[in-house]
Image (cartoon, rainbow, N blue to C red; front, side, top):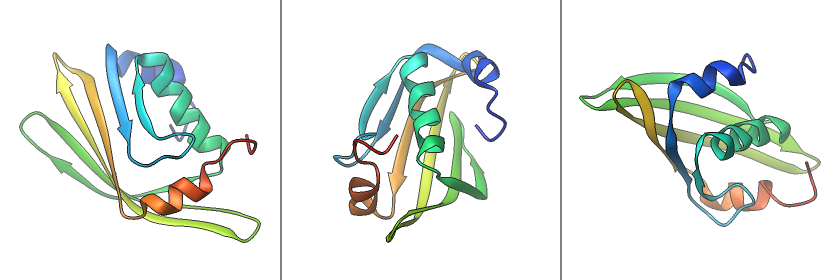
Length: 115
C-alpha cells in the first residue's frame, strides 16, 4: 500500500478475497473481491491514514501485522492500534480481518463527504 503498487497487490490476493473491518463507518463491513479490497486500501490512503508497522506475527496459515494508525482532520484525531490478520490459501491472501483498538474512532473519522 505504501508504494501504491496496486497491480502487485492484485497478484497477492485470491479473486474471492474478503476483508472485514468492524464498525459502522463508511469503510466498515466486508469488502468482497480484489477490486473492493483495493478500493478500501485506496480510501484509507485518501483519508490520510499513516501506517506505522509495529510487528509481523507469523502463524501456520497466515500472518498478522500489528500497526499503529494515525490521521487527523480539523479537530478530529484518529490514533489507534490495529491487528490485520491475513489468511493464506495456495500462496494467496484469501481473507483479511482487521481488529481495532478504537472502533468508535473510525466510525467518527471515516464518514461520507470527505473523500
